Image (cartoon, rainbow, N blue to C red):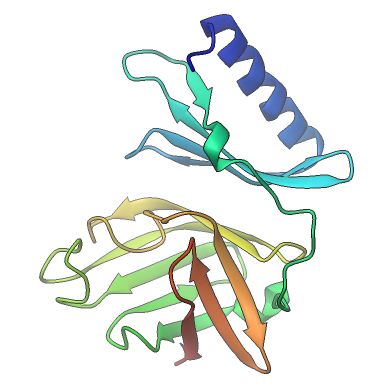
Length: 183
């Protein structure tokens, strides 16, 4: 379904004003032309939504299939914001790591030959990150990116953090959870 241009702009403007009015950040992924609203608060409800840039225009289209109501508490415990600060590796990829700093910046390294979508030699990305403990939703924007289609700059769906005991897991879309291990 194609919305008329004026309606797309009105939706984008409405979501933008709602986002800024409620203190929710939007994340723009320039490589894909996608704007993610990871914790859009509307009244007492919290939504995850995506806007996709219409090629050749300055318009964005709301991806209706992306809208998820996050208002129901997740079926797992979410870590506190302070639990995420530090340097982490994944149990699935021990040669890769990420450092999440308290100032909202991150550095992420993808090890060599860890994923077919990554450069064979691996690579780094740096950027800014945000996390909403009430929903467990994590999002990041890469400011530098030389690790290809890997890392925080290329999420595959909603990214959530979950805590089981003292272990923290990174859950990306419908992929299996990856346990994060403090270095």
